[in-house]
Length: 406
Image (cartoon, rainbow, N blue to C red; front, side, top):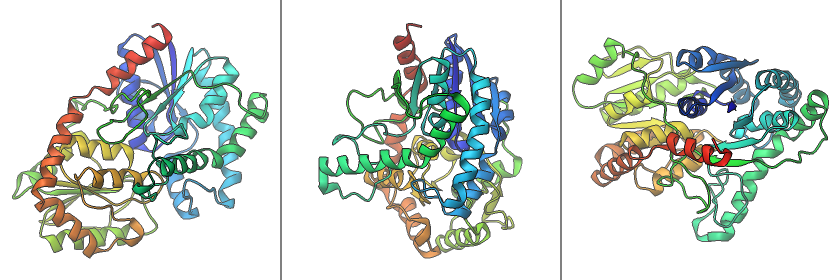
């Protein structure tokens, strides 16, 4: 089959779809990945057929942070730009997807992918990285992690309803404009998805029993990637270091965040590798106890450190959990508080530290717990082993094949 995978997300969110696309390709399908233009070279470099959508996710992340976009309400200043860019991207996606037998995507990819699939007259497959897509007493609200656990099924019902509204409401104007101005379709979508796949693990998050939860879609390590000599040397010296990085969450003052992080790790007396992300945390000079690097594959780096401090994105949470080390989650927004709460509930990390309330002292305290709590470290190791035993890509490819008879 000819499959068009629509992946509109940050690097951590696009990577699982790259892994799934490679798995589908190995199974004999003809796959094209459509993603923001800053990922095209990276995707083609791993052997995928990749086509670009106008716009860079790093620039979008900065604009969203500056405008105060929370994921539930689009600020007025962003609405017109969002619709305008979506009209351009919808035309591009329509061309990239022409001739496809099926389109698939998650929260970001579905915004345009479902409507383009309807225009082309082909099925759309939901391929989610989170437990979303249903209002149910059996489903916790990914965007309502503040819902008390004692509310039980009723709380799940309210939380999942809030989540589904928050995931769709900001993009209704986009869908209406795309359907009428680009695709010539009725204003309201009429076709349900043909299949739903879920690329996360039940070891981390619960979901209704009938869902196709496959396990995480991990990308295999790049055999050609070689770690910088200074990184290998730093990790080999002394006690195991910790890793700190907030991915695409650049924040309004990355330099201040970098200073806070360095102060915290020095309070604990531990060495640290700082991942700069998208131009964040650059204004720190390397020292005997701190090494600043642009990036390194999480699958290579995380198993080599004693703990990981991260923002709680779905992909980074999965990578840290599979590494079998405790995690300190500093959620910035959207789904990140949910994953931070799951890490704490499983006892593989301390309570999450919301970015708005983060201090050097609170981060130091959380790091000490992650480094010294033997029970936490044992539970993290067991969780890592369980995730390593799953093959989410193979499971997803098999489910796709059974659904479409291929």
